[in-house]
Length: 467
Ligand SMILES: Nc1ncnc2c1ncn2[C@@H]1O[C@H](COP(=O)(O)OP(=O)(O)OP(=O)(O)O)[C@@H](O)[C@H]1O
Ligand SMILES: [Mg+2]
Image (cartoon, rainbow, N blue to C red; front, side, top):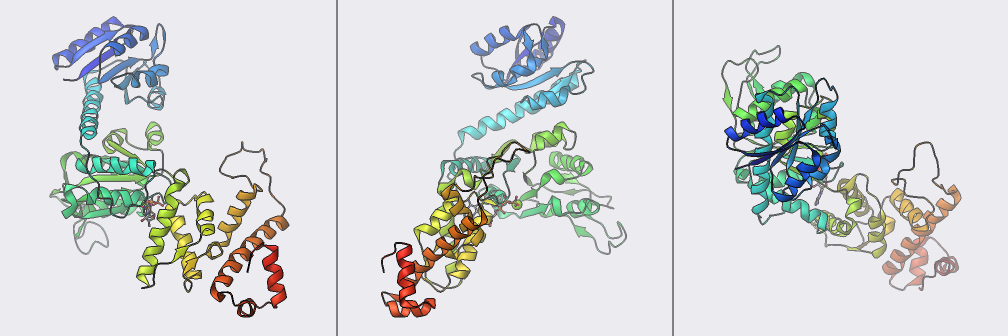
């Protein structure tokens, strides 16, 4: 049975809450000061702490992190003062699970309690199962991606909501699909809804479906996406864009597995598992009232935060080879080699568009180097090569290391220097390919390059390349 700790300097509040919780079977303690509360947290384990803000020995909000880090890592619910308008936002920002405003009502106290305990239960059960993940087409072996795979596997085992976050191109949709494919629902549909692409006027009819004649233009009844996900997984991409009224209706579907299509008098059933993705900060949105908190709580039983590619550069070669293998296979060509300079450029780049951008770069290189047996750096898009050279020579600081606004300390090189670097790099790659293709025949090499033999030798000498 769950254990609860109340920290509040008002003995009346403590006694009342303790009585309420104990009557429901929860073991409850209380403390009137932060110091005493922390002492209890060090001695015993708690699932949930109700924490007041104004306490005689400090500010409750400042203590949330410390309390969550205590041995039993309890969830924290803040008790906000009367008439404190920004209490909710402060509470959520401080890392609390939820907040309840004073004066307290039984309903207001029991609701976050039930949710927080359910959350913990699901989290606990997730911790003990470890599923061998079939990773499908998820490439990479970095510790960061392996952590994501492990969490994906645990999430797939449950029916709980999963929130996937990460920059563009990090694989949010790929992981959502993997959750479906590793779950018991694999026999059902995996239905993708791009909330950002749905015009607000159509969201409801697309999600819930409609009856014939429900509105002008509804000439046929149409099944909604929610129903299509019956027995399977519903993936709401860019969930932060879902209008508030639809969020409310959606929450009901989640709870009751029933909904009513637009213009229909009969309810339909849909039993689906929900996975959502976003690159917006839903906590912030919830604090501002732009996203429903109750929905958010249900969505983030599992949160999968996919790391950007620049934080796991060791995965770059595997990803590039995987992509190239695909392209070669599709065109029935033998697999090509990758020259070290090619991989070096890839590993140096910061990839703001992550895996998607990397795949595009490999596609470009493949198109340019289609006829050879090896891809060289010169086959890569020019901007990538230039950026790599600049970075290597320290001519251009990495613009991602954000400088304070308004202070321009980025040393930008002169265009001539940049151009020379790029030309030199392209020449080196070119010469390497040229020599390989002409297999030591310098006459042929000079012809191919459109140079005289002495010009070719001079160029080779300039780059210190031995013919
Ligand atoms: N670890 C990975 N292994 C193999 N392919 C990957 C991996 N991560 C991403 N990809 C590929 O990169 C491309 C982009 O991935 P995906 O569409 O899942 O990104 P996303 O996070 O949903 O991006 P966005 O926010 O722009 O929608 C896809 O082609 C996907 O298959
Ligand atoms: Mg996506």
